[in-house]
Image (cartoon, rainbow, N blue to C red):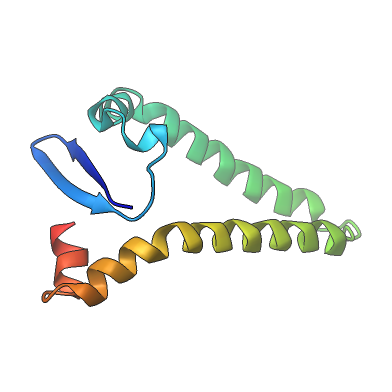
Length: 114
């Protein structure tokens, strides 16, 4: 099943057939998101600074304390991350394989044109 999709950001746009049905957010106006990030860049920088402060402060706070037993939590985290990665691979690989191996340009078509 091929779905022709037209997407674009700014002056760059392209049409391509997909082996999968796109989600609703993939079909939206990407310029809206780009505009939001351009206007709200300070929020991203602020959250990055807070994260950095939290990590550095957490290291200082825990320096002379006994470590937490995080093995069960980390096992659950790794399981969820593995499932998420498998779903992403299953969703993207058919389109990737179709472009990579079926066209004459192969990797150039996938990386540079798409």
